[in-house]
Amino acid sequence: MSIKVSTTINDDTVDFVCDESESLLDALRNRIGLTGAKEGCGTGDCGACSVTVDGRLVCSCLVLAAEAEGSKIETIEGMANGNELHPLQRKFIEHAALQCGICTPGFLIAARALLKKNPDPSEEEIRFGLAGNLCRCTGYDKIVRAVQDAAREMRGA
Image (tube, rainbow, N blue to C red; front, top):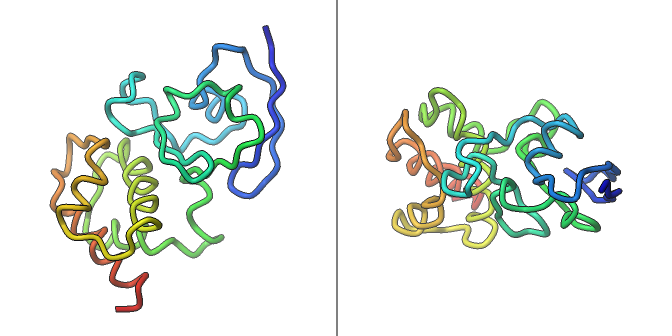
């Protein structure tokens, strides 16, 4: 059965039709054309498909697209302001906190969600906040350092 969904994605009103069992990840990628969120595992274990729904960090592979009705969704595509990268994006580049890029959008979305809740996290809090995201290429130290640096910049420290 097809369902019509009206939602807000990256501050734009979006309407789409999806199957009742379709994941939000599949709808974002295949119906809306937002391919930043990646399917790494399909079981919510890797965080590569992370987005925020009404300010809450979720694995979009575990959310039904139909559940997005009336919600505000933020994806990696909405993180930069035009050509101006978000501080987290810039710091990931500066700290070489990415390699293959599969996990990077999920880490960035998770880090942004963390810094919205806690603008001055300790290293332990960063590691805990990003624990739902897996990376097989970089290790995690460069990612943590990039988040720390971005947090300092965003606080104006």
